[in-house]
Length: 168
Image (cartoon, rainbow, N blue to C red; front, side):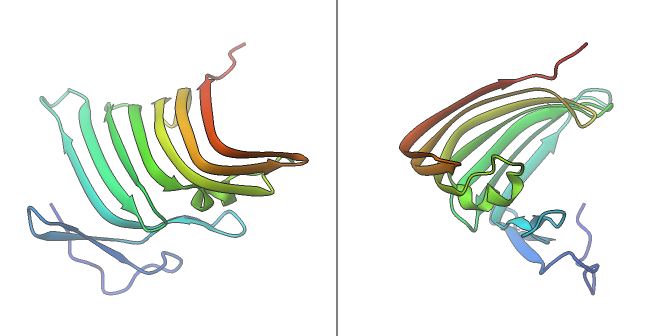
C-alpha cells in the first residue's frame, strides 16, 4: 500500500526524495536519511531504491531485501529477516561507497583527521530489538586514506571486525 505524498513535509525532514520502481511504475517519496544529532549533520542521500518484503505465514519472520544507489557514490544491498519481536538478522553488501558520507558518524578522541576512499564488502548484524548481539564486517577500502593522530594509512586497506557485546 502506498500513501499519497503529504502536502508539506514536517520541519527538519529536509527536501523530499522521489524514488521510482521502473518495473511497477510507482514512486516512493522520502526525505534523505540524516542524523541531526551530529555536527555537521551526517546525510546519506539515496538516488534509487528497490525494496521487497515477504512472509510465508502469519507467524513467520519477514524476509526483506533492498538495494540502493547513493548520491555520494556506490551502492548498498541489504538482505535479511525480522521477527515479530523485532529481532533482525541482516547482511549489507557495500560496493564502491564513498567513505566521506560516514565521516560525521565517527566520534571520539581518535576520530580520523582524514578519511577517504571507496568502501566495499559485507557487514552482517544480528540485533535483538535494536540491541546489537553481533556484528561481523569484512570490508576493503580502495584508494583509501585514513589518518588518525600521527598514523597515516594509504592504498588498499582491508578491515575485518568480529564484534559482540561483553556479557558479565
